[in-house]
Length: 489
Image (cartoon, rainbow, N blue to C red; front, side):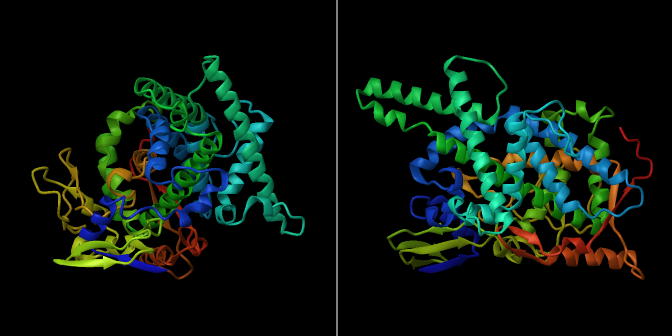
């Protein structure tokens, strides 16, 4: 079995476009089937069916919920950091996981949790058990995906493994009960909050009705129409995939950004300039996602640049299947053998000087801003931090050429949660960096410049386990300080 790594943008783009020739290697993704088939573990027609139905979760309404809840959670997280006086913050990675989890709990299940873990209102014991079980599974994601659930209950295994087995059983039991309730409510037209389960159940039923209508008109079998919906296991599998894909990646991106920003005070000033120009002088609970998110381009560049260099996902492998595949490269026809894994190399392409300039391996969010909207946006802008112009409402985002940037994949099968993650991230940046700045805590005898250099060392000391993560984030403690003249709106 062969592996081929691709770092040519044209070839990467061709591979993404030829989705029938370069398919998703389901044998590599099958571990995510732990609760049932889902959008991550399917391909071809099955993938289209899952995408159509699970797309019900990524509506503008849910983007607004992600925005408002991220504002709330980030505000409470910031308060937990800044209310400790001069005490260094050592829990950044853990705290970003809490923020991401609570945002997903609110959008997915319409549950409100304070950042400190207390419920906003009384919750049932079943829900609280489910919440704790889900958090435990996500915090032990590698074990959750790799070890079959039936083995995790064996009495001679470590207690942590057995606890994971118990948590997975709680998840499945709760979600099955939730599915049955939503099916019953749907048949009786009972109204309730549009949680993730309800949206998927309704979307699945609608897909079956539409297919049945088409089958009647064409005088074909109704059995095919029923297969256009999702089974109970598929809906439960997709809910787990929603949490798995949306939790660890967003939490890791937040953590990397806070550490990187601590090393670049000039970039903090750069995004604060935008925040002071764009945000209204009103409570954050009144900030409009539709109005503000499109304007906070500099905040978004922090995410775009961070995942260019530190994407949590190591790559998006493809598979040639049982046939040789031909591709065009530098005017030549190349043959990729059958049964070859083809890996568009995210790390290589995202740091290639041909596409990103001579400073391709440097973290420079300003590369994503085009000051002049009339300027071309298909090649990399090259201002240095010293020449970046002041904020202007005419700023636009740089658009990378095809095949040069694909953290959310590329083409028709890009990640359905792309905007959701961006909205959640930008809201967090807005509430935190409008009035506050972050710096690394200096060790004894260390200068501020040396502390910033150490922050970059901690960030760059990363490796891929299940996802990319810092090997020893505990080496860096952070200090939060209110900006001079900040009003705390």
